[in-house]
Image (cartoon, rainbow, N blue to C red):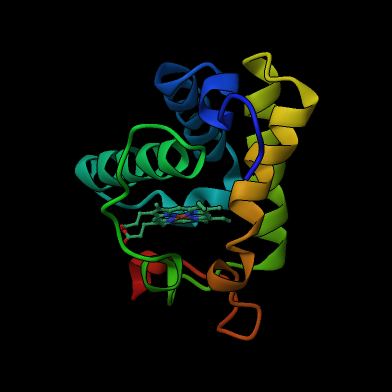
Length: 134
Ligand code: HEM
């Protein structure tokens, strides 16, 4: 573990993490490439948003506890592709940029996501399609 202040503190704490995640979700909602993930209730969106904020907060060394499901379970069957994964990381980087996060913290934040790539991307699964049709 790194000496000195946690990533959580260096990012600026809970409110900054929540603002970055909200910005990421706004970008995903506006991107037609992610339209197939938007056909869900507002409550489902709120649930996923809050769990992601908690997860990042906990992983960054903050005072949160992640009580959601593991990444393989919560994304299984969504058929998330490499292209969607790359686009998601680009939106995340843009959201971090917008909130003035410095380069080292940006890299560490993105690494919190990339460690789960193997559990989230299903390149061998069915091609991308509308999950609402399931
Ligand atoms: C292309 C990339 C991604 C897409 C399209 C995506 C999509 C989704 C969708 C549709 C859900 C809701 C599943 C449901 O309703 O049950 C979900 C849940 C979730 N995702 Fe992702 N996701 C992506 C990447 C990530 C990454 C990088 C992380 C963080 C490491 C993450 C963390 C979560 C969490 C914490 C939940 C909630 C888990 C739970 O329900 O217990 N996702 N994701």
